[in-house]
Every structure is written in structure tokens, then in C-alpha cells.
Length: 535
Image (cartoon, rainbow, N blue to C red; front, side, top):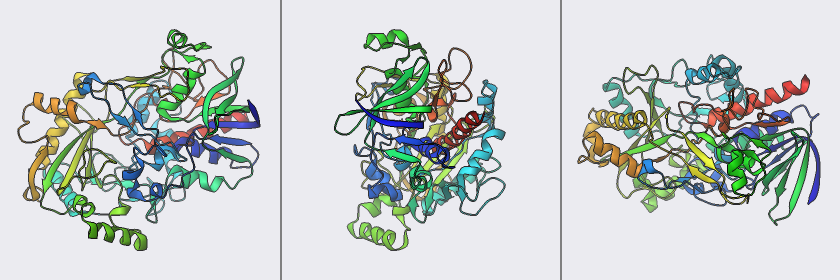
């Protein structure tokens, strides 16, 4: 094994939170920081073109290409689970949508015993991270590393959906990250000058000029090194297969995501002791909830054929495709500057909930799967997901080999509430489609189709066709008591010098897309680490 030197902080994972940590912990120049990323640098040009997620998802050069186990809730189907394997992590391959969630999400975290994580605590961190296109105001930051703007491309079919939703009784909300989330409006996106603003672009790239920050890529961390109950460093494997060690005088911080962080803890002997022993790993701490409490947003993609020209038509026409490329090359505008969705709806499925429990992603295109090509006809998609699923899944280690993916057991649609909420979301999509100016432009409900009418039929369609919307969380749950993996300061229970800082720490998934929250967690973790160092 090759010794690579000592650092104050060893950060494992160059994704959204990891990039924030690398920037903030190296900021004053006094601390030696190393960031280790299993993927490569973000050189692939499709990463930086907003629409490039069509090319980067399912591409093993930048995507871990995980796949779930067969899921009973999906009638035994397996799902592809894209996660970024590149600097910037999933912020380099995601749909660029910026959603913080609801203040109530974070207040629930605090009420679960996580002091310092209520809305009044985390809201300043969202503002600190953000550089909003209209400048600083009551709800947005104006000088942070992350560029946020309103969706730059518009399509009339999406604006017609907004008008139809208002006709159905939903309020038009120009800023769902403002005073309230509920309503319909245009998405906010992480774009700057027509290019993706990933965590690597916003946070890491400026920091890489600092002499006290080292970034190591193409290096998969295999295990954490311990001196008693203190994390003393890590072992990583380079692209040639050679093992290297790094020592941490201060802390080891895991930011490898909701799959990678629990996997690394278990590989290091922290997890369910009996399960670890069964695969030949000596348990050094019996924390059975490592890998459990997993939550994700499941989406049902309701598709309508229409008379309006959509992205499908542009992509399927060689002259239009060429015009798109020229427009983007010279103006950084047009379909190639688009995020994964144009307009959004946050809605309540009934009076039994006090805040929105479903979210719509409306797209002027349709496809069997994101990243696998659009349909051959004009269509738009009104994708609906349940915001706060009750079902809980698990990441389970099946091998002591770090290169082997763990088993992903999502356990979707395991409760009556989850099923009922998804069915009602599909019904909302249908009701909106009955209103002008949208109704006259729809030629056919393509999916699930007008033959699927009753709740049982809709539920069966959801089980057969729904898919992830790429938001795994919760597998290193923050909290108090035996069920928690980390405490409110993100320290792994029973250890010193070891924290987790990524979406795996969420005790409950936030009500919306998770990337903004991941970046906030990186900001919060940086404050906690530096505060502990000062004291």
C-alpha cells in the first residue's frame, strides 16, 4: 500500500455536498484538504450543455449505472438508478431543477430531535449558496456560488398546462422557493449563461486553484482506517488497481451519496453486525440502521399526444436538430439550453394534508425513459410524484468487494397512503387536461390511456410503468436513539472524526427535488466541522 500523506480533512465523494465541503473547508488556506472522487473530472462536454442529461444518464463513463433489485411494488420490475460518477456527482448529470422543499420538512427534522436543522436554521444556508438571476431579495441570495434562474426556454404547450391548472383551481405561483411552495409555475434551474452550473462548476472549480486543496479522481475509496474509535484515514484504489492510504489529522467526511456512504460504512465494519459477518466483514460497530430508512420519489409519467410541435418533433427532424445546435452554439438558447422539465405544480390531493403532497414535472417531450430517446410523435408529459412517501427501502451489502454494487431494495408503493396518493395524482393530471387552452390541443391520452379508468386499473399501470425520479435519501439517518446513524452534528454514532454529509442523512425526504438540499447539507456540514475545529 502506498502512503499518500496526511491531511486535516479527507472528503470522500466529489458530488454536490462534497464539492461544497472542499470549497468551504479550504477557504482560509490554513487547512490541508483532500477530495477523493471515484469518477473522472467533468470534461465530458455533454455535462455542461443543459440538455446533456439525455447523453450522460446511463453512460458508464459518468454514471454509476446502479440497478435496483426486483421490486414487488412494481410487479417485480427492476429500475435503473442513475447516480453521478464524476466531479459534481449527480449535479453534473441531473435535470438542473432547483427546489428547496417545504419549510415544514425541515421543521419536522428539528422536531425529530435534530437541533439546528429547522427552517429558520437552514434558510440562511440556501441563500448563502445561491446567486439568483434577479439578485438578492427576501427569499434568494445574490452572490453565492450556485447560479439559479427561471427556466430559460419556454414552450406554449407548457404554458397552456399552467393555464389549464389555474382553470382547475390551482394558484399561479411565480416563485415556489418564495413565501409558499403550493401552486403552479415555471421551474427554477441551475444554469448560468446557457451552461449547467453544477456543484463542481460553482464550488469546486474556483477552489481547485488553492494550494491547500488536493483533488484525486478515478479513485474508489475501499474502507475507512481507524485508530480505536477514531477515523484515522481511508484506503483508496486507483485506476491501475493499486491501493493508497491517506491519513486525516482532523476528520474523514463521507459525501458519497445515499448509496455510496452507507456502502462504505458497511465495508468498514459499521452496520448490522450479523449481516456483515455473513459476507466476511468484521463488525467494529453494530449500527443496524446503516443502509435502512431509504426513501425515493417515484414518478408516474402521464403522456398526452398533441397538435402542438414539441421537442419530439425537433429531435426527430434532422434540419431542426441542426438548427437547435446552431442556436445553442451561437446564442446559448433554445432546446439545448433546457432543463429536464419546464413547469411545475405543487398540489394537495385533498383536505387531509396541510401542504402539497404531490409534485408535477411538465415536459414538452415524451420518452420511454430519460436518456433513451424521445417518442416519434408530438406529445408532452405531466409526470407526477408523491412528495412524502411512507414506504422505506434499504441498501444492503452483498459482497466485501468495494467494486461490487450493493443491493438496492426500494420497496416502492408498500403502503396504502402511497398507492392512494399516486392514483389521485394521475386523476389530477387528467382533470387539468380537460381545461382550455390545453384540451383542444390534446389528440389522445397516450399513457395510461382512456381504457384505464378505475383506481385498480390506474394502480396497476403505475406498478407496471412508474420509475424513479432520481432522489434516493435517508440511508444514514440523522437523529437520536438507536435508529439513528448520525447525530445532529452529522457525527457517526460511537466514533470520533467521522461524519456523513449528503442526502443519506435526511431523516425524511424533502418535498421536492433533492439537489438544492444536498448543497445546503454541504454548507451546514462545513459550518459544523469548522465550528468544532474552533472549539
